[in-house]
Amino acid sequence: MSGKVALLDAGAQLEKVIMRRILEQGYSVDKFPVDASPSKVSGYDAIIISGGPRSVNDAGAFLPNP
Image (cartoon, rainbow, N blue to C red; front, top):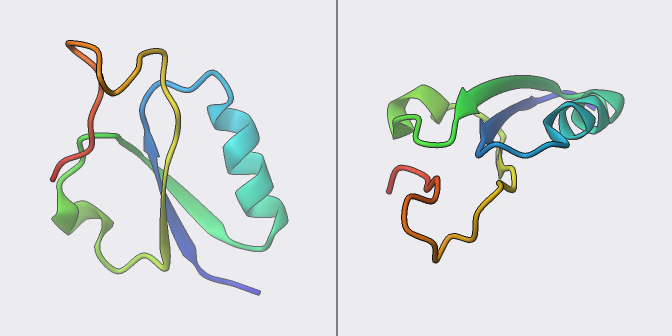
């Protein structure tokens, strides 16, 4: 299996574990900040948004670019 995965990092402590699991499944992975522009992540087979230290409902939470 092969393909490209974009990992949008929202500050998860387990980001390296997520990356390792993706690689173990035979995919390549590129890490981007959670607010990366859509043009940067176009062309990927999958996009994964990691968890983060705050709730999405909190003020100042990291949110993906709409």
